[in-house]
Length: 287
Image 1 (cartoon, helix red, strand yellow):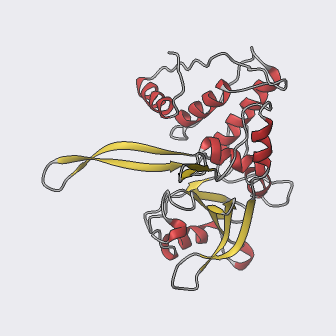
Image 2 (cartoon, rainbow, N blue to C red):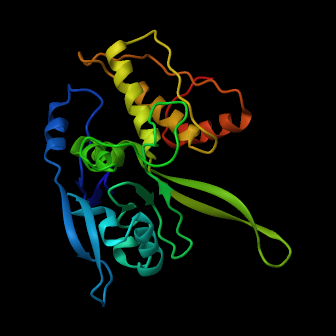
Image 3 (cartoon, helix red, strand yellow):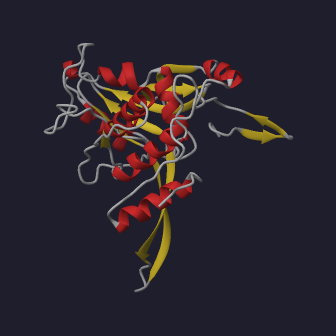
């Protein structure tokens, strides 16, 4: 709905506009600038009672993200926010309904940020949305380094939620992943079920893709780069996002930088995963 709008009596209603890959489309750029991103505090989130949510983020009036904020000065941290989402938030409430309202939920304090894209009671699974203790270095642990704002999680507010950045994530990074899984049917047999996951990029993925896009736009063809990903940290999605961005990348003069993007892998399982990602977005691929 956000990306494509909807039709009503033959008319298409656009709910949001996203920045084009080049600056030649002045009309779309103008419409992009008219988007309205709003923050609402203490939002009622459960019909029938007085419980409220700390913050809700909306694009043109449509709720897209929720945030529970905690202050260590009062003895609470992001862990209490996670517990609140798991124990006090009804995933069936309209604001939290999977795929229908808010797309991502953040648990944050001045030091760390964690996220989930699907509330499921006590089974809700949160992932860290942190920069790491030493960003860009070979040895990098959990958490965040000091930030010039005075708060370790300042990057989240000043960088990730910035107008262009947040719309870019909604328009070009988030996607719904579907996987077929075989499960026991309780009668000694098996059946196939479809598992859906709303994917929101983790910070290291977002950071790596954006830095390479900017560098490729400025430096052009020729240089080599290396991205280090630990096991299970989302290599496939990072490769897919980067490939899509490079395939439509334009330089400062709005000239296309690359004619095509070739992805080479050394593992069959990664090859299959990448084919699935590229097919999902209808992007031509060369092997």
